[in-house]
Length: 419
Image (cartoon, rainbow, N blue to C red):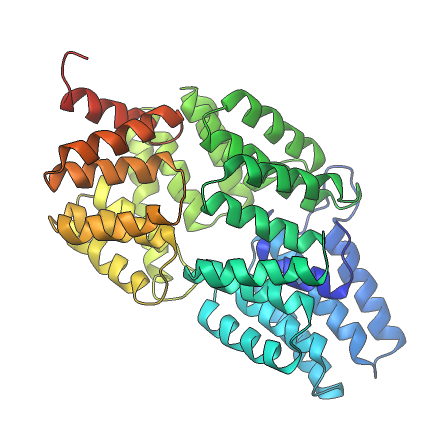
């Protein structure tokens, strides 16, 4: 997916992945590495022009998403600083600044900056992409939908708008529609853009997974790995497929490989979960402990593993007070549906089921069809004394045949013995 300058910069925060600076599967430089090299050549040839520094910043943002290394955002900020010294009011550079904020998960600041740019140039198509990303991350879904629609109205069929529309379709419960849009984006993506093609295939595979179609999910994820060897997000998603297939040792191996490529707290948590389900209790215990230590270090930052930390405290460590403390911290600045789910679950394990129900139902009201969220809603409704709602939510979860469905079936069987 080779975008023009503005197209790349608003898409950059959407993707994130592979770890070190080693070449990809065919021994060549990755697309982002090639972009960095080309930008450095431009700067060497014309050091007094800002365009080369803009190109370098965009390339570094792309590299950040390839490696999941936030250090590249600091390098991108340095490039932007040089660009602004040469052209202080350059609009493209200011858009890149917003992309960096998005990549660092500084969503409130990104939204404010994007709104400022939108007022300056109301018909700048790609600013609407920045607005969409920030609003989605914060849970402002109506505003996100409006911005995405403006992208399509101003430039029908553009790829960044298709991707954002696909993401919103899933959140609003139209999984098939989301898949179709991702597929359209994939078919329009250049074969040389291996990482972006792998990302799109991974999203398509994930959508098949959340719908319970593990066979189709596996096929798409293998295709993603053929596009980009050892692609971490594809490996992590394939590990979830293996868990659903009860092929636990294979899930562990994939999770280990994913964590080795991208040693983030989130991936460490997934590895701990796989080890636990594989019955490797001592290894799981150590992995969980390491996860807690690492995630607490960055818990107060915006780019964190707080959602995983909440579930760790709630479901594994059985420390409900800590789960709620982290959940309140995250809830204080963003209300996306996944944060609402984690907050609701933390409230639930602390016995605050009336408020928990309010939060989980607010999450589900967006339209998302997710087995884990339905299971949480069912357990919360059950504890709140609403058996009818509990059965309805648990059945929704069970019928999806996805992550969370098995536990929903167990709870449902205990709720309705003899069925």
